[in-house]
Length: 168
Image (cartoon, rainbow, N blue to C red; front, side):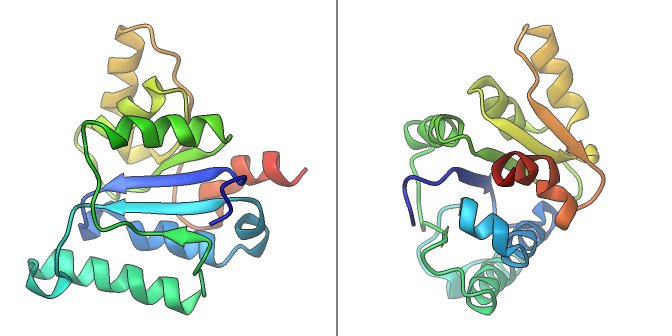
């Protein structure tokens, strides 16, 4: 990965409802975005994918297959583990300081803790409308600016506003 590029960050457990594949497909199908930014997917903590629950195993396998399909080696990272108390806040700060963004493309999200954490760190958040209601309420109640771009679907639209800033 080119450390001078902005970081596009996704952080969630490996669950089909989190729509990690949508994030990778949107990035993988956009050559301009690949030239402008790195993608990091933190999809839970794992030892051996083969021993995981079926849903997690399928999601992680799909992530690796999509990385291969779009030849995202050197452009995308998928670490096996991270320290939630020390490294996660730093990941948000890195995304913010590089001019990157945090993507939550979940198909459904009852609360959205990662949205709150990311926004409180100052990183631009891109999320589907189904994921943001509770998070925005909490942020406003605590007087935290809400740098959230709400999108209706995942695909090329997920990065539209962000990509526009990077390319032009």
